[in-house]
Image (cartoon, rainbow, N blue to C red; front, side, top):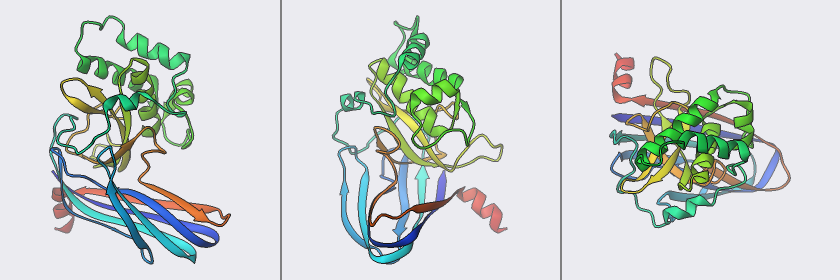
Length: 278
């Protein structure tokens, strides 16, 4: 599937900022399931700095803006050709060993309830394949946390989301990482884009899901919020230990100011775009 993306992040500052530095994880990398046809990240007035690929294989770019500035707009436009590989990540350039992702974080640390959910999901599956066990954990999280926007916050932990029983893709992803780690399965947080379908099954164009490490297959994606594995509707941007670590944009401001953020994301298929132009 050929997907086009238009992603705009608009930052407003209550007082002029003297200097702004951001790190962007906004450019997808080529792999077996996606091929970047065109891609551009633009910020007016910004000076581009270092560009490098981190140990997880993700492309990182830094920018800086000299003030005074009261608004910054980061605009992403691009096209990607995607292939459905049933969630399996292949031909990705990374050097970090999978065991690194057993570390977890404050957001994904398992409490007693998350450990119990992990154990219950895997009960009786000792002889099953590693892939089937991973699917069982994803199903358990989907069943335990109902998709319901507006009830959790960016700082909500996996334990808090499970106790609430409701959340968004970020909460499903944190919880899945937690129950996987509780079962000694490496897991990580993935950010990207999702092409919303006409029947409303896809919740957000800017999306998150988990990858669990399955011996013999490598990293396999599981989208517990949508109860599926990533397919050709998905574009993978990058990964990390949790939502904060994998954030597409991270920044540092010079000057104690308050910021507000407006985000718009549109993901369209080539077929959809052609239909709209007729």
